[in-house]
Length: 429
Image (cartoon, rainbow, N blue to C red; front, side, top):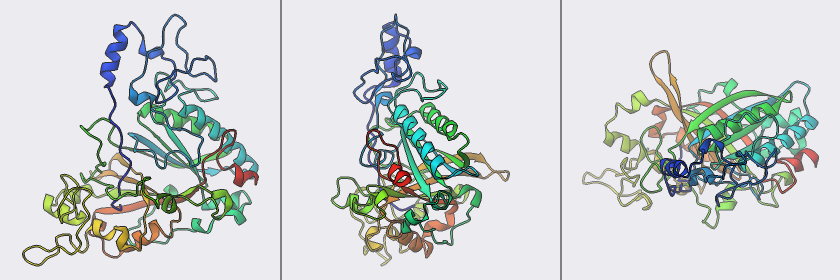
C-alpha cells in the first residue's frame, strides 16, 4: 500500500437533513424529484427515457443536496474514475466473454455499456428496463470506468493490439492469490457518493452484459463520506493510518507523464489511457491491533494522529531519512513502509492510488475479512507498480500484517469523444 495521496473531497454546503427540512417546509415530496443535471443543480426538464426521472406535473422540482448534484463527465480526454476524488462507495467487477463471443459482441457490449454509463453519470435512468433504485437521487459523483484484461485480446482476435505493458505481473512473496478472483477479460470500476446510486450502476452494467459476458468476480468497497470530517483530509484505512500522503497530484508538471499513456504512445488505441493494477489486500487486523500505537507508527514510518513523518513536521513535510534519535537509531526505521515506497527510493516510480476499503464479514475462525481494494493508475506498470512492489517484497515491515489475495492488471483506454464508445478505436480500428 504505497504511501501517496488523493485529490481532496469537498465538504457539502448543507447536510441532507437541512435540505430535507427545507423541502418539507415547501410542501415538496423528495421521493418524486426530477433527475439532476450536475454540480450546478440544474434539473433535466424533459420527461421520458432521455429526460431523467419525472415529478408529478403538479409539483415543482426540489433541489437535491450538493452531494447529490455533484457530477462527473463521461466524455473527455481520459475516462472518469481516475483523477476524480475518492467516493464513499465503490464496486469493482470483472467479466469474461461468453463462449462464442468475440470482437463483434465485445464492440456491441462496450457500446451498450458506454451509453448506460453516460446516462447514469448524468443522473438519468438507464436506457433499458431501469430498476428505479436511484430514482430519487442525482448523479452523486458517479463514475464508471472500463478496462481490458490480458485474456481479452486472444478472445477477440486482437493479439497484435495487446500492449506489452499488459504482460502478466510477476509473482511476489506476499501473494496468496485466488485465481477465481483475479484477472478477467473485461473490468469495470464504479464509484459514487451514494450507495444506492453505485448499486444502481452496478446492476445496470450487469444486466447490459446480457449473453455477451458473465461475471468472473465482484468486490465492494467504501471510503469515508464527503463532509464527514470538519475539513477535507487524506483518507484513513482500516488500520487507522492516514493513507495516501504522497500521491502524485494533477497540478504537478509530470503528472500526465507518470499516469497516462501519451497521445503518441504505443499502441495508438491506448492514447490518453492508463493501466490499472487491482489487488485485494487482506489486513490481518487482529495481529495489527495487538501492536502498541508506537509500534504501529514504526511499521508505517508516520504518526497515526496526523500522518506526519516520524522525522517531524506536518503531513506534507518532507521525510528526513537520515534523522536519528539520542541513541543514534534512525527515527524512521529502515524497513518502514513509508520509507520504502518513496519515489526517490524507487528510481522515481510513482502511481496514483485510488483505493476503497472493504469488510466482507467474519471468517469461520472469527477473523475479520477486511482490508483494502488497492487500485493504482500509471502510464506503465513496469515503471510504476512493479518496482515498488518488488522493493516492498524484500523487507517491508507492513508485509507481516497484510496478504495479497487477488490481483488483476487492465488496460484502460482514453476517454470516449461525443458520439463514441470506450474502446472504439481498438474494436473498430
